[in-house]
Structure formats: C-alpha cells, structure tokens
Length: 202
Image 1 (cartoon, one colour):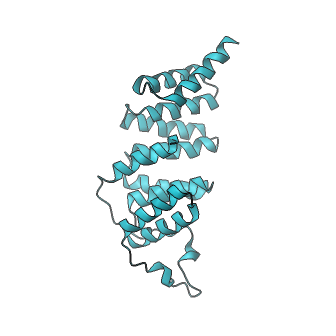
Image 2 (cartoon, helix red, strand yellow):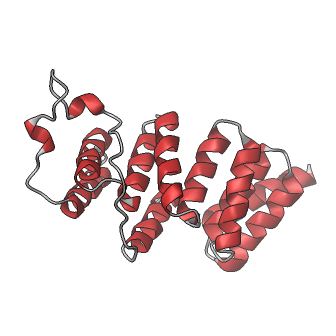
C-alpha cells in the first residue's frame, strides 16, 4: 500500500465520522459528461443510487485503477449531494492522479473551505504545491497540518521530502527521524534518512 493510499484510507475513516455539509452546487469538472446539447442534464445524471452509494462505487473503481470511471461517479455523487467534504476531497485526489493538478487544487480548496482544520486536505494540497515547485505554499500547508495533528508520521515524512527538494538536508533528516520515532516500522522514512546520511559521509 502506497503512502498516498494510506493517506486516503485515513481520510476515509475520518470522513466517516463527519457530518456532511450541504451548500450550493459545485460545477462538475467534466461538465459535458452530464449535460446535453441544450445544457440540460442527460439521463446519466439521474442515477437511481444515492450519493453515499455512488461514492462507494467510485471507491471500488479507484481500487481497480479506473480513474476516469471513478471520477465520473464521484461527479455524479457531487451533483446529488453538493459540497460534500468527502466527495470533494476524493474528486481532487482522483484528478491529481491523472495529473490534472489545477483542477485537483480547486476541489481541495473547496473542501478546505468546508473544513479548514482538516490535516488530510492540507497534506494533499502541500503535495501538489511541492510538485509545482511552490515550496513556500507547500511548507505553509504542512506546518498547518502539524499544528492540527503533530502525531502523524506521514506528515513528517512528506515534510522531509519537501525539505530534500529545497536542499535543506539537516531539517529533512530531523523530519524523517521524527517520522520513525512515531512509527518505528516506517520503511520509506528509514530509506530516505539513509540516503541523507550516506550523502553526508561522501
């Protein structure tokens, strides 16, 4: 299981205990998938399943690796239950997996508006900012994630990766060490820490 899958697993467990918020309808990222020539929703948009069932089906498609189908189903769930925190987060994640980073960021931002203290959203946004080379923004979101929960080893691992990109190796080493302290079986953190120490000995 990859670290991002672990993040998603933790996020899913978290969202299971959240009260879903209903505000105004969010425009679907693939608007044409659900609208006809006259701008009306096609028959596809009127699924007999409720939003929670659709999210479960989309999760299954994600596990199968069918990102396009998963996104279409998440989008349908978003139409039925607008501004649902879990759906928005998972739509952002699915888009990010397709390298549609700008679209993914918009959904993460929408989700963050609903729950500004959600560590998983901050980490997901930090990942996209890091990928784009916007290190200051990535660092801000990781700092916020640590303010919310200073006991998550994945946050320290992700922070360490960012600091390596920034060439701040001493700080990165500290982050990896903290991740290992919190999770002694954290293989990836041990491997990255080993790389830094090997570099120091050269």
